[in-house]
Amino acid sequence: MTGVRPVLEYGAAFAVLVAAWWYASGPMGMPPYLLPSPQATVLALVREATTGSLAGHLAFTLRSIALGLALGAVAGVALAYVLYRVPLLSTLLDGPLVVLQSAPKIALAPLFVVWFGLGLEAKLALVFSLVFFPVLIGALAGFRAIDPRLHDVAALLRLGPARRFATIDLPAALPGIFVGLKVGGVQALVGAILAEWISGNRGLGFLMTFAAATYKAPLLFGAVLLTALLGVALHLALGLAERRLLAWNDADER
Amino acid sequence: MIEIDGISKVFQLRGKSVPALEPLTHAVPEGRFVAVVGPSGCGKSTLLRLIAGLETPTSGTIRLGAGPVKRPVGFVFQDAVLLPWKSVEANIRFPLDTAGMERARSDAVVRELVALVGLRGFEQALPRQLSGGMRQRTAIARALADDPPILLMDEPFSAVDLLTRETLNDELLRIWQRTGKTVMLVTHSVEEAAYLADEVMVMSARPGRLERTYAVDLPRPRSEETKLDRAYHELVAALRRDLRGGEAPR
Image (cartoon, rainbow over all chains, first blue to last red; front, side, top):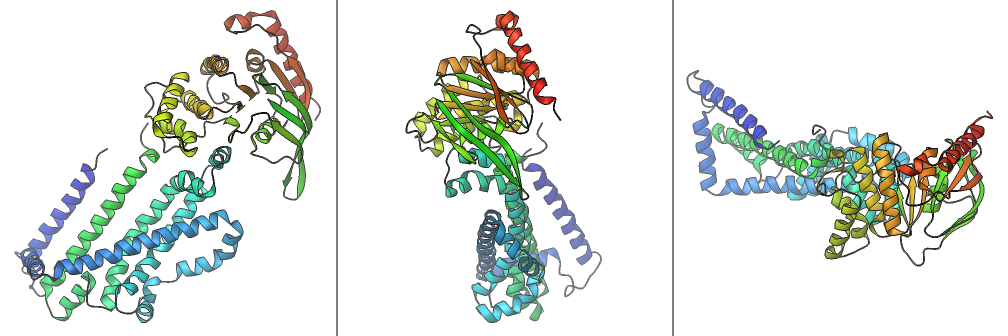
């Protein structure tokens, strides 16, 4: 199966949404301060882009997401592996981890601002905390599902711990890791936007609060639209990576 | 050469000691094909895992006269246990890659092994696209990849159908004759043991111990003719009698 079908599906859904939007804002006569037309929204985005600040906002948000996702994923996989290899540690840390995991990280966002300031660090901290747990849980499930006989193979080949991790444990746990990553990817976007709402003066989240505060409805809609597109792009990118890396794990062939 | 000297294994299961293998002493000369038969629970798999170093013995020693080789044994499991994300070729290459052999040399070795186990045309296939028999051929090629002097096989053909099994038996004999390796094959099929081996070790269960050994002096190379040989049938009957006897006391 190629990547054409999901693109078509997303495209169709998007087209229907835009058509409904256009109808509501035009022929149906919703006032523009409540629902700006698609044209006005695109125009506002274009204007924001040409005055030069849109690219900067987009880049800032993208950077928080990418960095937070990468750091959270690496840390999540790393701790999962330590817990997997040291069962004693996993029984000790099980309780604390459940508490941390079920704590609403979003509610900690203001605290992160206090701790890490108004810049990138606070955004990263929030995104990290949102990505870390799903990846940890997914990776742990992935590691625990490894066929123990693969470790016999590793022992027969006298693989050292690093070699064994890179050649056997990590690839074998990849399906589990991706389950966590896909949850974490959505969370990362939410975290980045939310962190920009509460503090700082950059990013798509900031653009939204700025547009709302200054009654620029078209710009607000534009920022929301961009964020939605970003979410779709993130989802597609993770899906693509999964298909490439996990082709061997497809259940439906044969 | 495999020198087993008073090897035994006791497993600890929830605080209880479960003897899996009574002290066992036996020597397998280099290049010999030995089959191990016995009822389930007789410790034959444990014996193989001890020789491979996958378990540590409770007592006794094992000497593999293999010289200074980093990986003295190749091991074939009951299921192929391939890396599911690697192709046939990459699975066979895996021992070579992790030993640091450069690509040009390992390419040649892999090509030769693929031909040896009859997998030409399937080099790029993933394990899940293969039949059980083909997966097991891949596993045999992988076990042979870095040319270990000893090949240990733990019921390697018990998961494939009978016809495939007989084909694989003949191919194993051909491979063994080509490579001259010391082979130790655990099986629950007395026919397979009699057909393949120079020597058959009969083990009995609870606790696992070596009951007796048979020297198999059927002529080589063996073929369908062998299965018509009177001596073959007598050996199969004797082995079966031994196994039945070993199962009786409950």
